[in-house]
Length: 325
Image 1 (cartoon, rainbow, N blue to C red):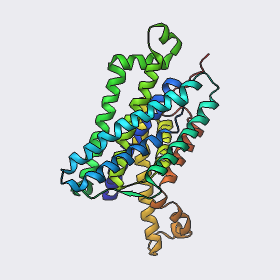
Image 2 (tube, one colour):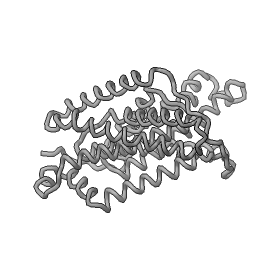
Image 3 (tube, rainbow, N blue to C red):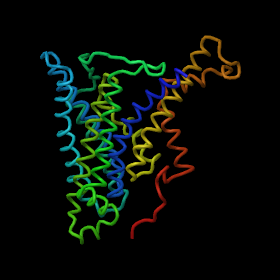
Image 4 (cartoon, rainbow, N blue to C red):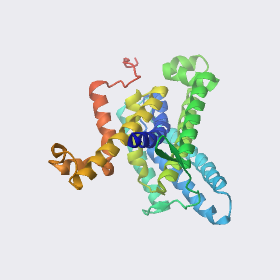
């Protein structure tokens, strides 16, 4: 039971971050039917910018929370600018092009951003300075840290704020109208270009915060960190129903829990097999269990993605819709 609660806490923490990143994918797809594969690199840029600022301020004697907030405050506008530049320079000229053209462009933008980050921050891994004291709490036999509590609280607050923005504001109404039919929304006085740009900017801001949370949680950041994180967040968006905001939230949380539980339990079984005390049937071929141990937790995310695409391509909360005329 202790192992289950611990892995559940770890999975919810990771899943909340996946949900925040997945919201960037699902918002863009819901409005312009584009899978922005460069979104993971925006998250990476947010983490790298925040780490640069935090490392510069760490020795100044400022409170740790203030240092992290300043780093996050610097990362958000940089990522927002990157998101706006992507939409304005790369995607807007291809808005009426065949769908394959912007998809390939998104992959190209992802590669460009990754290599620009390598030129700016080098290939080396950036380590987060140990300025935040490690505070732990016991919860039903499991250990939860102050950083995990902060990540969960902030993620749920951001998801709630985004839901209120989309469903309770004029901008949200314009976004939903644009997603429903951009031509009719334009006839009704909606500035479609501005709404689409705002969607990219909001998604990039969420990605910046997610990048800081991932870097703070794991203590490291690198120019390639956005690739796998972006793919997992995309898997979460597909799991919940691409284009569906509540679905992205549920999909991210569910994917994080599945990944943590799978890696935790199979990793424990692997350790038992190594010591020769596991079930004989399970240890008959221990190499296969080592393959799926905790060091290979990425496997579970993509297995879930494959299963969803095979058995329910529209996702858990998605609906089957026809192509636009």
